[in-house]
Image (cartoon, rainbow, N blue to C red):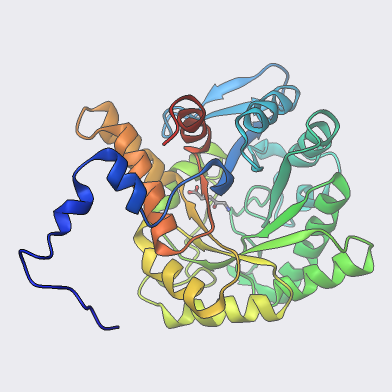
Length: 335
Ligand SMILES: NCC(=O)CCC(=O)O
């Protein structure tokens, strides 16, 4: 692209940065409440609010309180929430059957939200790790995460979530062929409008630690997830994964984690022009919160800068544990 700029002093880039009103006028991307999906952790019991130690400001709530959270989100204009369960270790099995129990935590929570806050979108993950005694996203046989048998389980889980009223399914398991098999099941069972936001480029990352703490999977995981989640060194492979998921019936795609993978967000959006999301994962959230709590960074500014970066990289939206905080800021102060 040619850059027809006059030489200094005719051109002075600082002219466009001289005042807040001018900076707002020329800003190329903005962060708004419509860009946000808020992940919420659900736990057993009644009237439960359990802080997650490694994610300051985040708590797990029981099903009776989850609609309250959804209501708060809706009141702030957040379009969608994503629910994640803290599953009792006693109900975790090698076959992860709890994943398609109509009465599991996220299915009950979804029904409650749909009853009480019908206008907010509800997204549920499709993956076995919260229910699997091995802590893996698929079924493990002789130490191997087996692909095709896992697909059968994921399909049942997807249908149970659709029946509970989930609007968006987020297959986050990274098994091959999962989008096709889920889409097919949705069509055959009269759920044509259930949307698939595929975790298409999900990397085997060190940044998921606090999430595993939040869903109680930390001790359960045996080994690592490198045979199904992507190698952090790869970028072309992300485009192939996205292409496959779109060809199998995904409506929207996600890159995860977020901040270390902004280059992937940009490539995906440029190449496919489909709704593209980033997941600012638990470790990213925890780093900002921990540094802010120590007084090492300005937490508010870092939160806003990190989220704006996703928009600049081309994302249409962000799953972020900061969603409520940033939506509150937007409501109170504008941005
Ligand atoms: N499937 C959802 C996640 O794995 C979230 C990871 C995180 O927030 O670290």
